Length: 206
Image (cartoon, rainbow, N blue to C red; front, side, top):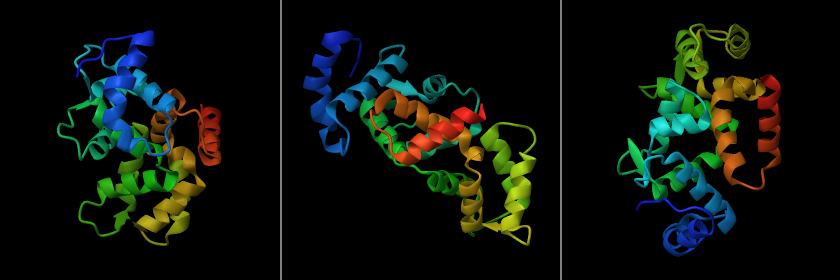
């Protein structure tokens, strides 16, 4: 389905052609918030072919060449027919899923990327590599690396220990929180107290 309408015509098209298709996915979203998400999608769909790519998603969130954003995209689009380029219906499901993520969910998401064998533990060296991937830096944040050692007396870190460390030092997840905040600012009219606090923490860290 191609989108190229603006203003009142865009809203009429959304109400007649799009809203009936996504109505079962609305949950706690209002029609206006769903339309905001539709407008966001069409602004990313530069060639107006009715789909967006991971590269277009990168441009929206303002983060270039980020491995963690690429991983996030792949995980969120797991159930989509084509993760390389997704339709508005799939995009709606993706963003709706991301909306409910909390810091502990992002901690679990990043931990599981490296816990390939499902052991439930990572070495301190794997944690170092993970932090470098999250922050897109050549060296891991040494403040956080010292901080996480407070949660384990060995060089093995469990998911519970990592989650506790992240929740007490949430700024390490700023790249992912930035993506979530960008989408929320464009779409949702109300934020929970948690999300408001995360947004303020993100702004103060820059």
